[in-house]
Length: 88
Image 1 (tube, rainbow, N blue to C red):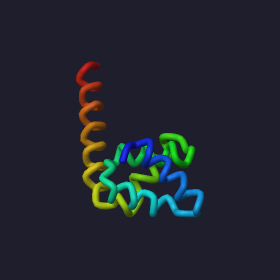
Image 2 (spheres, rainbow, N blue to C red):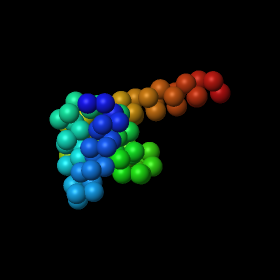
Image 3 (cartoon, one colour):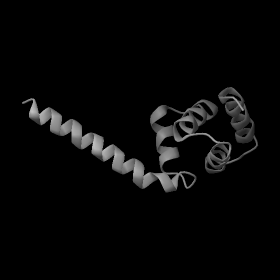
Image 4 (tube, helix red, strand yellow):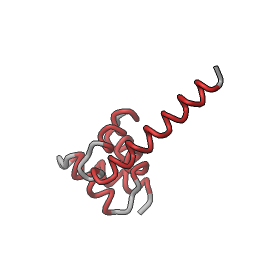
């Protein structure tokens, strides 16, 4: 299924009252990555990027990735901070 098809499917499901959590479960089962899920939810529900990232990151559909993603984010932040300190 193309990203466009997924967006349209999620719009239709939303119109029928399906929750964002169920939409995210559907997207993950359809093989979407976390980034794809953010994009589809953002476009299907008309929400901004920050909110879409938050919804996906804290969803139960992506709960198993949260710890790893947080560690990755922290490592990048630490490295950037160390790099900035080294340039002072």
